[in-house]
Image (tube, rainbow, N blue to C red):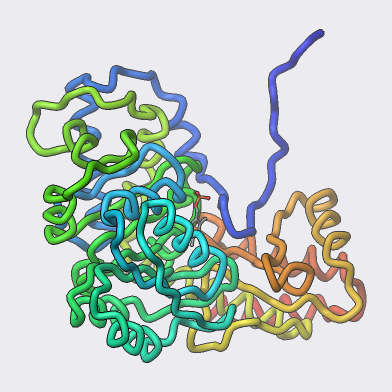
Length: 390
Ligand SMILES: *Cc1c(COP(=O)(O)O)cnc(C)c1O
């Protein structure tokens, strides 16, 4: 047998994540590996914590990257905050809310589910009704940016409702962080997790998390041990905690953290507000182009995420054939629909480094080439350009 070096094709990633990784990050990944307790590495860890506080708009001390993907950040929040028998209200309006329910049950909690239709934002009134009906509830979980549908929920209102009824809040910001405002302290959110491969445009495999002082207190005073050894924050804090004295917990993914650091430095250089504004502008350009092609959005304007554009596949068009042509002819990846929207929508991501003018033009012109004359390609590109010039 003979094996050869793997050289991936160069793609443009406009799906639901991962997004395009900036060349500065590939260079960071290749820097020399040092020890995970090297004083220079600890200096980098402290920088990463500060930069994550910036990205999350928080002063929370416990703000770190979990050494595993977004799903592990989700699990970190649930296994640390849910104790056996706890009642937890989960707002479900898509795939990731369903995963939260799994997490509650596997942590020994009892999930109370607040349902909203896929493609809609979470309805705060329904949450308040559930909080009134279940006064023993201890936690509320919801997804800020539902990547399965492109719907954005009002995180501030939902967190404040949770607090009003003495519940801690767990918020999924995997797709929102750095794409739209995630203001942890202003919301009063208690446990918030994200991912690196969406609007931070870093390589996949890390999950930034942040915990409020109230959440930390709850974790410190648990009656039972956290059932996951690896994700137990009481132990993880021995490595990521304050001060120069750090103890071995697990070997940090050193080079992946170089990349995360670089992506956060880039976010800081651009400025959070500018990053949010760029996502909004790019969304408007893509929207103008797609609508000119007669392609319509799943989510209402008011709760539409700029970074995840779920659009209906035009009548009579073969979903899989179009996506594979985009990939094979133009090296362009867009996402398929999930769950009840499988085969009905495409999910076009404009996340992080993918949210730039040349990607919009590539996406519109490639789609026009694949869909043919009916797509109004030239007019669509003109419509997008007008938005970009605004
Ligand atoms: C991508 C995503 C996750 C899971 O992240 P992984 O890195 O794939 O584990 C969780 N929640 C939302 C909203 C996501 O978009």
